Length: 284
Image (cartoon, rainbow, N blue to C red; front, side, top):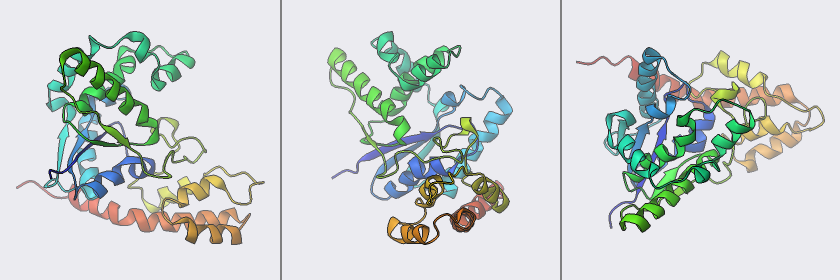
C-alpha cells in the first residue's frame, strides 16, 4: 500500500515558539517515517503581519533551519516555499469563484477582526481560501495543525466538496490531525500562546530568555497548583510524573517555575545547538 500524505506549513513571520512546536511541528517529525510529507514555508500568509522584504527573506531561511533543526529529513519530506509554486494563487482564484462571501464571514479570524473593529484587508478575509489551495493541491490525507487551525481545514474540505460537486471528483478531502490533549498551549499571560500577543516561549531560546519568560508566567495566588505553569510543564513531562510533584509543592510557585526553566532548557538546548551548527554550514 502507498503511504498516506501529510501536509502543513509555518509562516515566516517571526521566531517559532513552543506552542508552534507542540501544536503542529512535532507532528511533522513524528509522521515523516511512515508518511509522505510536505512542509511548506507559507510566505504569502506571512504578508498579513510582515511587509519588510529583507526581514521576510531572512525569516524564510530561518524557517528552513527550524525545520531541519527539529529533525525533519529532506530525504523524506518535501520542504518548499509557497510563493515558488504559482498554482497556489491560481487555484485560490478558481476557488474564489465558487465560494460566497457570507460563507467566509463565518471564519474565526474574520469575525475576530470584525469584533475588534479592525480595518479588515481582503487578504485576511480571503486567508482560508488560500490555505485551502495550499492544502488541496497536494492531495494530503492528514493536516497536522493546532486546534486554532481546525476550522481552516474544515473550510478546505467544504471547498473541495463544492468544487467536486461542480466540476467532478478532483480533490481528496483531508482530515485535521490535532495532538491529543494539545488543544491550546497557554502563553505566559494565560491566553493562547501567540506571537501577536507577545506571550511566547521561543523554541530556540537561550537560557536567560527561557528564565525571563517562565518567571513572567501569570499565576493566581489562590490556585495552589499554578495552572499555566503546569500546562506548559505538561508538554515536557507526563501527568503521572508531574502531578505528584505539583501536589507536593502546592503554593511554591518559585520552585515550580525554576523546575520548569530547567526542563525547558534540557529540551531546547539540543535544538538550539543543532540550529547553530546548521546556521554555520557554508555552501561549497
